[in-house]
Length: 140
Image (cartoon, rainbow, N blue to C red; front, side, top):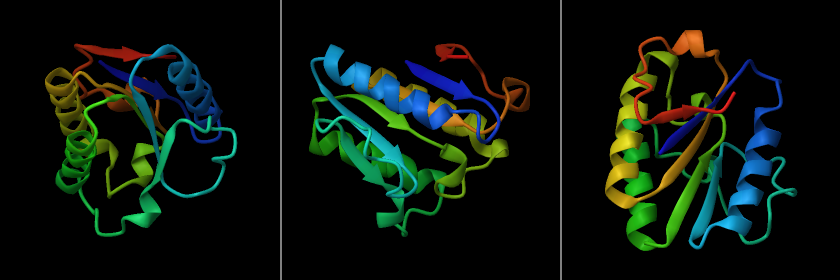
């Protein structure tokens, strides 16, 4: 399942994502990964959540490389059950125009690997008019 958390910049999406990740870390049997752009504001993420900062991977510059990174993460650890991607529009040159393709690819990974994705997007649901919300959940 792909879960989308939308809203304008500064509306508290990161804190909501951290709270959801901490809840999932307690509830799920597998591993939880929290992907964010930088090392800032990671202190409130539970210690048993794997935090990945994309600043550490400057070679990932487009959606194809980002998706490959996600597959690589799963291939290294088949126990990954939930992946939180905070502020996707700040990662790997992902923009609103590429969101439909990105969400479709996340849905494919989710179905193949059994991973639940939680993605925060600094945009309104109306800005994502070309995204197919089938098999997605909008959390707000």
